[in-house]
Image (cartoon, rainbow, N blue to C red; front, side, top):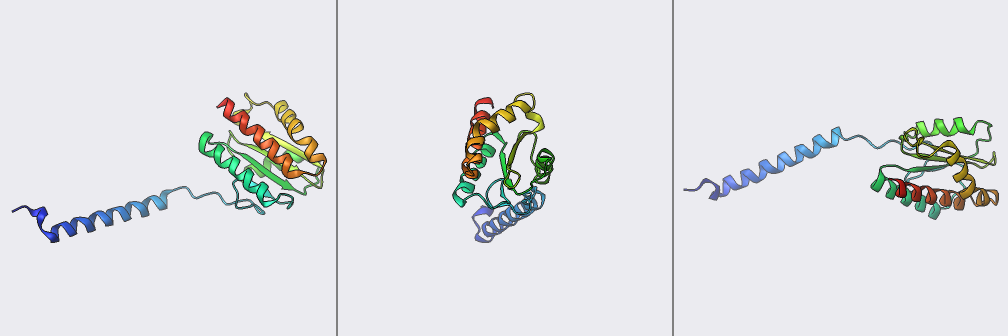
Length: 172
């Protein structure tokens, strides 16, 4: 008589398989890297931190969608930060912020300092040979200056983020 044809044996095998599947799920849940906590003032959108509260919800969502696509396709992102820093060392502020939100070597960060009437774009360390400091200056000026000067901070951030996303898509 075939043992697997017995109902009790079949149910026992089903229960054992379920227990193993649950154990694997629990084990993977414990070993998975937790998502990094957003920086203070961060939004629920991917790498958008509107600390100065100047971006519309639709702009934040669009910036988040751009980053979701970049992360999915190229494992890199363009973090956007708005602030009322007003200090003279915006580079240091941007670098510290990039470190706080755990940006990687292939990521960009753009900081729009509203009260300081300034902005800064920094590339990750792994991009320096492909996208120079001068490229950062040129891209920020070319894609943000006009909108930023008019106070259209959302359009400035979107324009630069889209241009960087195009650059990434072309160069990866």
